[in-house]
Image 1 (cartoon, rainbow, N blue to C red):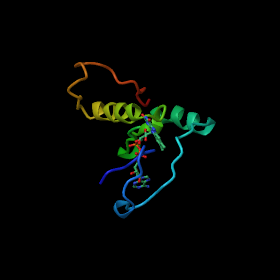
Image 2 (image 1 turned 90 degrees about the vertical axis):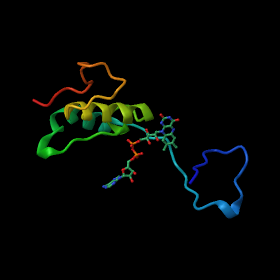
Image 3 (image 1 turned 30 degrees about the vertical axis):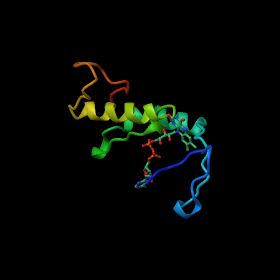
Length: 92
Ligand SMILES: Cc1cc2nc3c(=O)[nH]c(=O)nc-3n(C[C@H](O)[C@H](O)[C@H](O)COP(=O)(O)OP(=O)(O)OC[C@H]3O[C@@H](n4cnc5c(N)ncnc54)[C@H](O)[C@@H]3O)c2cc1C
């Protein structure tokens, strides 16, 4: 399956499975409050959270947040220097 975003040339209509309108995520005060609470929630009831929403909402934020959680399980991404800290504060 191929996702076409703002194509210069429309794909053949017979090949289109679906069309959807998206808006770029917008972070408001509620998001900032949720992000501030996240460090205290990580790991509670064996539940860990990651996703672009934990930071600024971009692709790299989703990846970085997953790396943060993986490090807490003792798994380091091969491109992360050994012993490097995570960017998330540890829960008290
Ligand atoms: C129009 C648009 C343009 C963008 N452009 C850029 C860009 O140019 N550059 C950039 O870096 N980022 C861009 N982004 C942001 C980028 O898409 C996100 O950073 C990225 O997709 C987020 O990845 P994620 O895995 O955190 O979340 P998502 O990709 O949203 O994945 C979350 C998944 O969880 C699933 N889910 C949700 N609730 C539940 C539930 N209760 N149970 C089970 N599953 C659930 C959803 O179905 C989804 O599959 C754009 C976003 C949009 C909408």
